[in-house]
Each structure stands twice: as structure tokens, then as C-alpha cells.
Amino acid sequence: MDQLVPVLLLVALFLVIVVLMRLGWRRRGRSQADLPAPQPDTPLDEIGETAEIGPLEAVYVATVLADQPLERVVAHGLGARSTAQVTVGSAGTWRLERSGAPSLTIAADTVETIDSAPGMVGKFIGGDGVLVIRWRLGDHLLDTGLRLDHRSDHDLLLSRKEHS
Image (cartoon, rainbow, N blue to C red):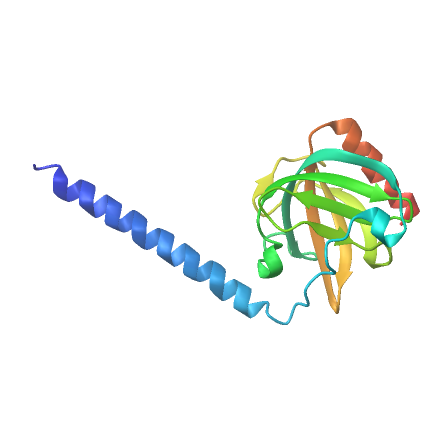
């Protein structure tokens, strides 16, 4: 019985922390309301492209504001970490089919650069282990991070840098 009170206090503290995290997530989403919705997820064949690379297995790390690797974008489901299959179309469109989160199609003409980084919010691994796609969504420049399952896939997608 003497341990019941501390256990109940810890449970209450845990619940308060979870509620505060959820409120923070919602507040961030409201503050990013000016961010336009990405184009609807569209299979490559419906936009007239064939799959040039992929599908490759990856972890979708997050989408952040460009040059701000700790400013996660939560609007439109872009902040949810998930497993993904990455496909690059013949014209350079990127298709990220995500599990448990909205899939994403990044049109070739919105891709600014493709690079590597040591990490971004939610995943820091050092070196150049996170593939970063910098793309434009309306007036906003965003970085989407992917951690590929195989280094050879990372290098293959990074070679798209010359094509963008």
C-alpha cells in the first residue's frame, strides 16, 4: 500500500506529459496552416511516368523546414515517421508510399536538390546517412529525409543529384 501513491503519481505525471505532447503537436499543426497541401498522391503511371528507380525500402524520417533540421512540419501528415517505399519516375518525380501515414508524390519540377545529411529531427546517425530531398511546396522550401535500408540504394538515389 505504501507504494500505491508513488505509482499513481507517476501514472498521473505520464498522462499529463502525453496530453501536453498532443497539445503541442496540434498547436504546431495550426501554426503551419499556411502551408499548402501537397499535390494528391498519384501513382507514376497516372502522371505519364514509368518507374526508373525502385521501389526501394526506406524509413521516412520527417519533413522539416529547409535549413532547420529540428523544425518538423506536422501539417498534412508530413511529420509522421513511417516505413516507406521510394520510387523515382522517369521524369524525376519522387513517390513515397508510406505505411500508416499519407503517401506523398513530389513532382520533378518542385525538387530543388538531393543531398545527404547526418540527420534531422527524430533521426541522427552521423556521417551522411539520411538522404534529403529539398523541394518547394508553394512558397515554402522543405527538406524530406529518408533513411534507406541499403547503402547502395542511398548512393543510387543520391546520384539523382546530377539529374535534378
